[in-house]
Image 1 (cartoon, helix red, strand yellow):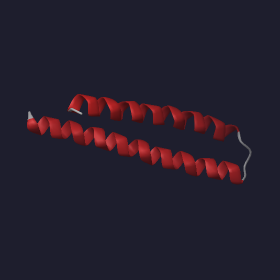
Image 2 (cartoon, helix red, strand yellow):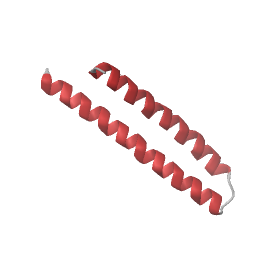
Image 3 (cartoon, one colour):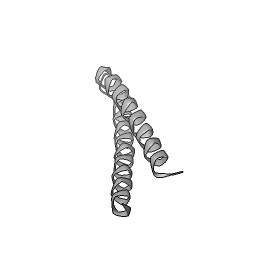
Amino acid sequence: MNFTEDLGQLSKEAKALSNEIGMLKKRCNRMPEGNSKEQLKAEIKDKQFQALFYVEKIENLSKAKKKKA
């Protein structure tokens, strides 16, 4: 893959995770307190870390591209 394809793929994955996180948060807000809600909060947190990873990779790719130019 080239830079543009890599960046596009990472952006798609980050956006998909963002959408998924939004849906999970909506569901979590409607849930009663309990173990299920705590498990869902943990899942949301994991997905947020994944999204952050993709954002950092995008930034690193962009910086590397600028250094080459």
